[in-house]
Length: 257
Picture (tube, rainbow, N blue to C red):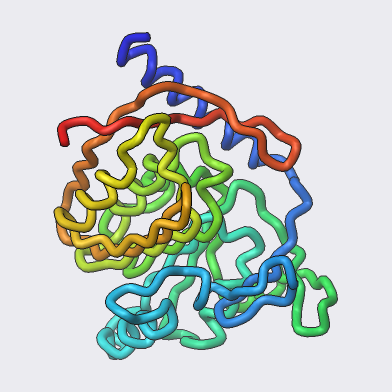
């Protein structure tokens, strides 16, 4: 298959996975900033997201709020935010000093609290003025300007995407210079060996902090350059079974290193 054909197939794969996730899957949210209320998902964002330069997501936020000194709000985006429970917790911590935003393929409303009872979180979302956009994580610049956010997070998102590297490129674009991207449970989707070499390239070239856990990565990075040049190219289009559904997947290989 030619490169033109592969790129066309890649776009179709992206469209199909977004269409699948745009349907109501019945998801609810247990995971908040500091804690969770479900034994199956025992960690909040503070423990799920990787640290950057030894600091967790709360410490990084505290530092940014202190740095800004009320000159403007701390701009934070959660990709794949679901109900936005994490965003509510961010507002509860930093109040008007933070402007939390989220993007999700489907606007879910049901979250769980300390009493392990479901509740409609949309009232808090509206009360706090949290902006949640229904959109595609693989096309973030369709919804947000470049060089805009101080921090962008993504927790257990890429399993539902055709092209996880499209999301990474988009996150890099919408981050401000020196902004922080933090991603948990990322699958690099290599059909052949090479993901270790790619991880080392990203560490050395861009200073990314990457923890490799089997086939998945947890990583955080600071935006140091306007352009993110990834030495990868599409290797093929495949499929993957997840929760009884079949998802299209874009697979990659190394290119140029």
